[in-house]
Length: 112
Image (cartoon, rainbow, N blue to C red; front, side, top):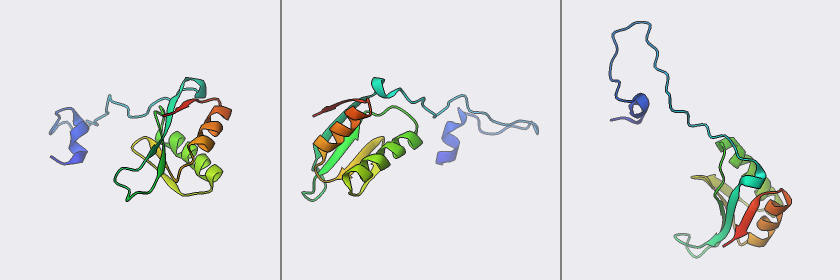
């Protein structure tokens, strides 16, 4: 089955010309306020050829919000990175700098 048909809830075909399928399932998550976010900052080296990557995970919110946070962190550290699977990945070991930034922005964050 193709990916585009998975969210139809079992609907395969309709003979009604005026039918329009509306998904009851909304993928949009409401962003929690900064004080309620439980973020974890840790260092990861797995499957990265020995290179260190600082990871921020636990963010609850929309994709746009986490991309904006990732952009701010990348600019702060002056390095590259990405947002993937709800995590912000920053090249290098910048855990302390990221943690200080998140606490300054009123996020609940801890280093692991």
